[in-house]
Length: 255
Image (cartoon, rainbow, N blue to C red):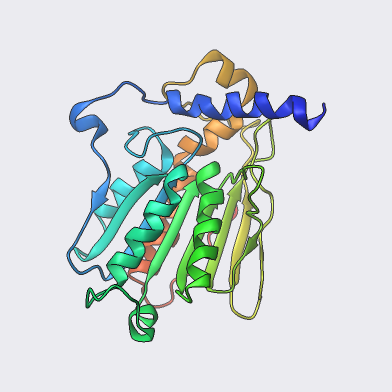
């Protein structure tokens, strides 16, 4: 099928992710955020498709809430919608500017401890944000992409050299499926922890709030969003970088 015909279908199917948990209000839809005055570590997640940053069924939001219960009080945690990448970038600059003079010194940049993760379009946003931080010579501890899907003008397969370590989780089925491989722009500076394949054709995952259309045409992509095994492994990587322990494994096992 030609790409110009597939594109509207892809956009429609990705938008179905927004239906997961839509219409919620009150405490159940509260934004996931921890905003310490002096952040020791900055953890930024991106939601996929057109999913809101406070959707309680969405993988990055669920993960952020779990992280908040495990990490030191000085950890900044926030989930952004993937189209708000610029807001995430400006937030990071503000947090790193410890003397509040409006510019980042070499010392402030060197103290940066940043972790980025996301799903679908949010995973692609992770790479773009890391690239923007690279242009400002700001290091990133870890990037994690889950079933990464790039928009037309985006490139999510090459991890910039300011990133110390990167991991990629993907599934290969359906009209919408993630990038199967990432590589380092400079392998001497970035460790690719792994490209981890999940196959839901043999072991389906039940997700809340899906429609029949989503189940029929992009079931595996949605399942990567709510698979507890996958997100447990992402959590291990993220928390391990925030508070590393002796002899911690550098990689996560294949599913």
